[in-house]
Amino acid sequence: MFLQNLFAIVLIGRARLLPSLEAGTRRRLSRSFALPLVMLGLFATSAAAHKPSDSYLRLQAGEGPYLTIEWDIALKDLEYVIGLDANADGAITWGELSGARGTVTSYALSKLQLLAGAKICRIELQELRVARHSDGAYASLALATNCPANAAELGLRYHLFFAEDPTHRGLVSFTSGAVTSTYVLSKDSPALTLDTAQPNLLSSFAMFVKEGVWHIWIGYDHILFLAALLLPAVFERRDAAWRPVTAFRPTYLSVLKIVTMFTLAHSITLWLSVMGYVTLPSQWVESAIALSIVITAINNLYPVLPVANWSLAFGFGLIHGFGFANVLLDLGLSSGSLAMGLLGFNIGVELGQLAIVLVLLPLMFAVRETVFYRHVVFRCGSVAVAVMGLVWMIERIGNVSLLGS
Image (cartoon, rainbow, N blue to C red; front, top):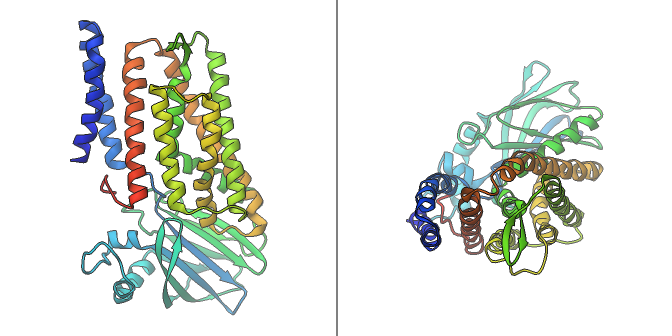
């Protein structure tokens, strides 16, 4: 029902647009609408725009003879895979979680293997608790092992949720004495060797860069905001109307300025948030990010805001920075790796954005004068982006699910 209403909104805009065009143009435009509408439907059913699925493994060596582990796994993910909501009321209580203690433990430990050299270590549950992260409640498993804390070589193999969600990640922090190393496990990289001496700074930096790129590419809300800013990039306002630009180089420099302003802005609030100087409720931040998408997309159709797009990118980039901060905060960075994490993550975000721009901008410039771009990509694309942003805003403000995600 929701998707039917969404298509209806787009089709209403189409119905108002088509009568003003010549008959031949209307026929071509009608055929051209099929692909964007199908893509919108597919995107709407798959894009939740929420924080990706993660779990958090904190390994500690040095406080005793054996390695200890704290493992936080999202309740929503466990509910999807093994079912925790016994009375199906939409809320998982402590009683329901503790009642499924054995099932949760068996499932989790079947997806994790710890090795000291070539020897597989025994892992057992000591205590089950509840923890909170930026995206909600987690089951927190306190685990004991017989793995020597001073082992010369430690290995980790991880396979949680990869079969159900290929984008799932295991975020690992390993503390040995005063040294903390951070790692990210994925379906393509499910195993690692833990550094029991000094951390590899170059490897850690590369990991944060990769995390920044990854966050942009799977962050549908950030991508849609960038898309809303890019759609009018191959136009300029003349005589109260959008007109195609005449040269590529000024267009590219203008887009580069937009991307740079967005990066500069989110870097400021990312730093302020991660350092603890400014903290805002996650629900407010995520709702404001969705609102930024709506405003930017509507401004494409009715450009009444007296600011340039680079100003919008900077202003709303300040808001998006608080959203990026949740990623780094949930990684559990130590003070020693914080500066490296911030720098690497920001570089990754910038590279991820530039990769999108380098692919899309030449294509947009090539078709900027066509009916297809002016009316289907730009107008209907802006409508679709605004509608999606509005849906996400309603979901986040009301804590409801309109897309079944």
